[in-house]
Length: 545
Image (tube, rainbow, N blue to C red; front, side):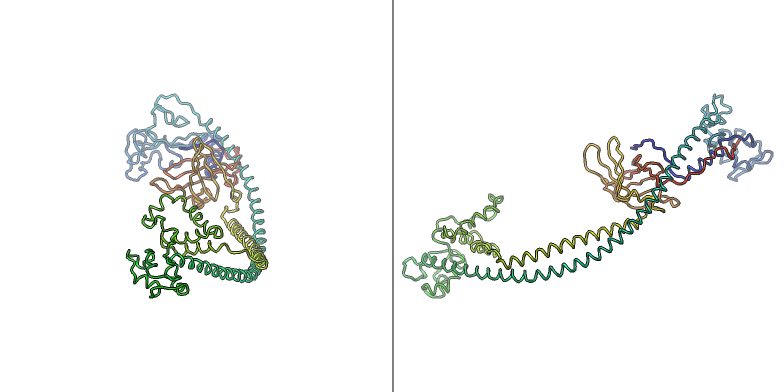
């Protein structure tokens, strides 16, 4: 589907000049008739000399001249019948004095339809034809004059654009020099601030390490005190006869202490937990406490159902959405150690029988039991604030340096970019132009990308990103190529060719899709305009007859 609106333009300047030259040669009348057979163009007159044998233009045979235009096809190339319909592959030359000469297939000679504006193709059909060549020539002259005026105005605009581009280029070069100078200053500043930052971070690091070490030592004391308190509590629970000794028999009442968890807790295994003796007092119990504390379940929780019998997967399913909330709730009784010391013992034990605690989980529980690290002292906090200020200043300077690097890259790219022989296309850089059709909005951003978006909602489709200038060798700046766009379903990536034509405005005039996923866009710009030829229609008038 193609969408376009009429905008006066001169597609390629050389054809425009050609048409103007033809017009200069065809406007006036010079009544000079050059004799030649009907249907022969002046350029081939020398091959048709009356009274001499005629040689077919393909050189295959020679015939008497009176057999030229005798309504019988003698030559394979049809050259002996330029003015009749005898040869199916022949062609007839319309002189069209006052307009442009033309060729038509010989089959149209005397077919009752006027093909030549000078009516010469219907010399023997009886058709009523009017010579319209002069009227067509007049209209073409007006059209060419209008196109030439537009080309002239566009060319004047182009000269202004080129001057602005030159000034813009000088400005960019000057700006690049300034930015490069400022980069050097910024680099020096970044390095100076890096030293300041590293100098400030060293005492900060040492102060933090001292604070953390003191906190770790404090936590170790807290853990040891809690461990002793729990050991004394467990000793009292295990000492059923209150004789200040823990015996093998008393230990056997806690089957969870079975070392190999084979369901059979023997006296030998219990004696092994007690260090190889039958009973221990409080002092000796301290040496075997590590054998017991990991598996011991407080008697206060003895009646609680053991979740270990339920597969972990089943446990997770009903609470999977609340796991992140439930774990802190489990930890709450442990934090309220002064109000409920019993819960303090319960939670670690529950963790023991639910599943073997990971080191990370146990450390988290230990940290919760021990509270949070106390705030830094004033001296340490001052060092931290000072180091943070140095970091902020360094980060800000580094960010500014990155922005300058980006600015330099963009300026260097723009300065070195091929914007045409005189940078006449530079004004299109960083601009976008749209064309709205019944279904889509097409957007061309020169030297960047082409896109298509549904007019009434939907996502944008990339029709290609800037590739290169793709015009013919003698006019490479007549076409732009955009490639590697969004891929078509089971097809190639979309691409767009942008055809540039001369005009006073800068506007997208039409879009089409000549082949699947390959788009063509018409774009008008003064930057394409060339200096038009002088229109002197009164000089060197001539007409071919």
